[in-house]
Amino acid sequence: MSKWATQFRDSRWQQKRLEIMQRDEWMCQSCYDSGEGVTLNVHHTYYEKGRAPWEYENDSLITLCESCHKAVTEATRSISRSIGRISPDHLDAITSIIDAICKTAKNGPYGIENVAEEEQLAFGRAIWEGAARLSIAAFEARKAGAA
Image 1 (cartoon, helix red, strand yellow):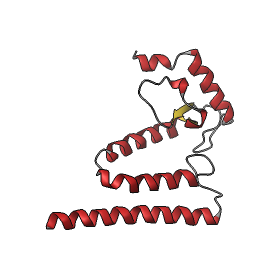
Image 2 (image 1 turned 135 degrees about the vertical axis):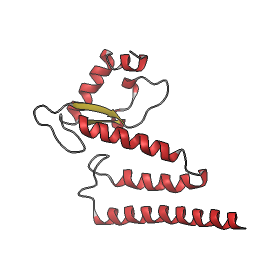
Image 3 (image 1 turned 180 degrees about the horizontal axis):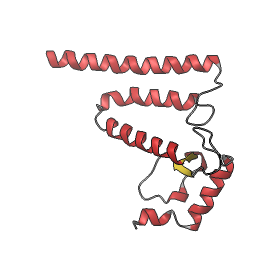
């Protein structure tokens, strides 16, 4: 068993895990399932090298059911691989889009229900502006390559 996997058996992680699940009312914060037989996991929204699982701030941890945890983990890996292929010139636009999504997500990091109309418009503007910056950068790169 790896050192990382062993840390999830540590009593400090087990205590933190229970604290997060209790905060989230023993419910998946993505699909809101809490029924009998549902396996819940505590998901780290990010990792930092050398940091133990229990050393993260509570707001960076979220309760997910096993299927949502698997889906989020796979999507995160896919996004990470994609970001590695993005030109550094485009990273600011991508970051602004992600920030807009996170700021608008009032019902936890995986839902944007019940968001005020003004905030929905701000979200739309931020997405549009980020996409426009990406399009302009792509056009300029093609134009420079053709010259």
